[in-house]
Length: 295
Image (tube, rainbow, N blue to C red; front, side, top):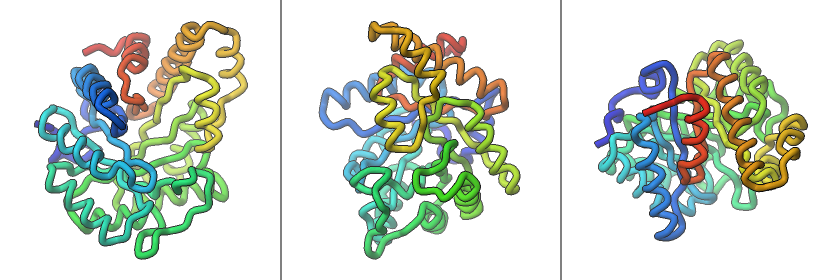
């Protein structure tokens, strides 16, 4: 049984020297499901503060997300955080989904506006009868049940943000609506993360902001993803990766870069690390080895 369901996320994050957490996504087939549960089993001994399960574009994985988070709550010691987006749902449908999470024992939630089905850079059009902003979803969840709520943060700014200051204003509004913590989009410069934290603190909000870590295992794939979500791969990172040709050497350099970023973040005061696992524990465990994080 999950042990953290009754505790606030701030308590879970602050339990120990620093927080470790993992993100998974609903698998598409049986082989994917096997990989997912193998990764969960491999990472569970590290006693993460929480694990999150993503929600497909347009609500495409709604039932699977509810099922997986419920199973994690029932069958493991982990605290599951279920993602929920505004995309493709009316207010009434969102209320039913929130009730479904409560029924399966999931009390922690990542409340996200979500991306349009066409992708993060497409124009945003609210669903008729639905919600417009993540702030609206935070408020709905706060009034619907005993949810501990997290939200997204963007060290380099959301693709649709007018400016970095406007982006910080949005994050602060989500905190004041009831969000307890934030998890950032992937990034590759610690200075971008610390600048975001400074902007939020200057606005009088001190909620934990967990840096999201995505190791570069394939440079072209990361570049494509970064272009979609507004994350730049810095020239100095490209230069280091480009010194290698063999896929295994590129991968090893990506792990080294991720470990160095983690060390800089923790040394600078980040409350923890959130790993985008892609349902595979290997890269995360290799980073742990570099950081000397043990079971």
